[in-house]
Length: 323
Image 1 (spheres, rainbow, N blue to C red):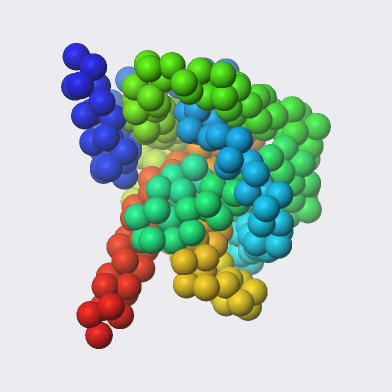
Image 2 (spheres, one colour; image 1 turned 90 degrees about the vertical axis):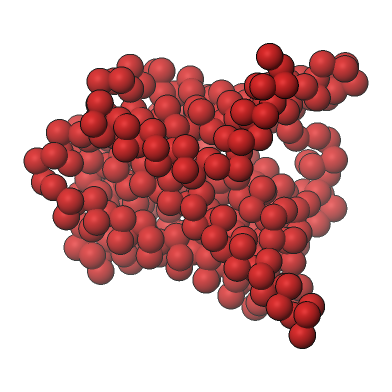
């Protein structure tokens, strides 16, 4: 039974995008199945995702923050400058309605995604730098995300900065801290690596549940407004994500990074914690239910595009080696 669970976890981690898209399509036709993923339930599920992240972190990962301060500073500045600014510009270029604008701005103001570390590993990037950037942006998120939302979206809706700060603290920092504590104290136990091996699959299932909950929430609006709403929102998400990759790479080039670090900062900047954005949108912008749509699309698309980009980086390395 345990081997089946471990194999399932590996399969889910490898095919995360496919699984999430399948859940989204399934929920579109049977929206009531994930109708329970709302409010506090959604928050708890995100907390479980962040707990799985904490269970994989060690003291060595946090030492990177002190050992490579210049790299981490550049990465954090790129993360919290590029994505919010690009989102703000896209809102105006695409003339987005307030609800969709809030969603894409929220994605832009969130920290880097957890799966970016896997993508960095796959494309032979600087994995230690990737983990350091993820740690730094996650630790800064309780302050930076509400502040940036106030700056970029304050004219659209009143932002509850204190409430958002506390919510991010509860669903990110505390679960990650608990996971790190468990890893530090129990990593020597024989059963602990087995538990860790199940975490990737658990994380994918939790993220799929969040996406399913979002599709359930916006189902009626999607039916009423048709394919155009989805295509228009996806176009914005695609531009936001792609420009994040491009400008992330350029920031690494300006900083004089080597190829591995440029790949990593590109992926770290472009891939956002869209799961966190989804929960925040559902909690703080409930009066604008469509605000969760860009977040849900980002959940699926960032995983797909990250895999594609990692493959392109890897093929470029292979071509350069063979040449």
